Image (tube, rainbow, N blue to C red):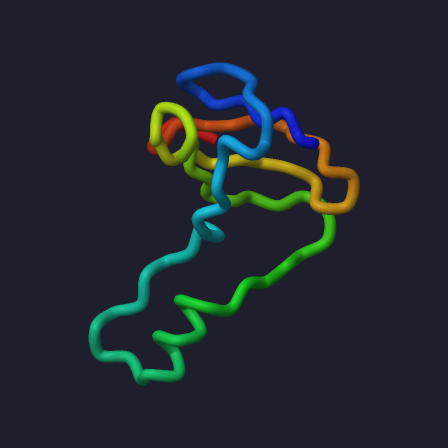
Length: 85
């Protein structure tokens, strides 16, 4: 089980959290349905260092950016929204 460091509550067990999204720029409103569907549903699923948006659903309810290695599950850091990376 992962021990995820919530920027507000501190380290907590993984079941308290929900994966929310990969950080991505939202398409403009004049894009095709295919582009919009790609934005909503397709993930890069990269191996290695990755940035993800998570929510502390079972705790404070806040969203944050989590940097982790998807191969080793090593968590590098968690950032509050807008915090410099």
